[in-house]
Image 1 (tube, helix red, strand yellow):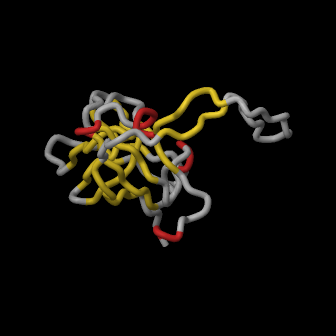
Image 2 (spheres, rainbow, N blue to C red):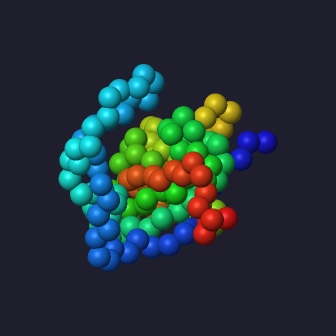
Length: 152
């Protein structure tokens, strides 16, 4: 039986003092090496990049493989904004009978449907009587390739 991608709340987004990091102007090729340069385009604050509505934004960690087709992998930290309207085609975090899931929100024949991005997962049709609540829209993600010691 296929397991849907679920979400586990990590923390609400809090924006404190900016933490400027360097954003370099060069864009490294993902295939063929390109000459690098030392030109910093501008300071980059991850809060500025990822969070538009701090009071309405929270983070969840995705678990499962049903959204890999959308580039969401198990372990990714998703940035979820409750202030963004869940329009058809957007990826949402929804509570389905008490379980948080990550799915693409669609409408078919005027009814809401939560759709996976992986073959073998049936869509979740949402009827008015169902216990389903969209918590927010996924507006970004963070993926680590090496787990920092503090998170192990």
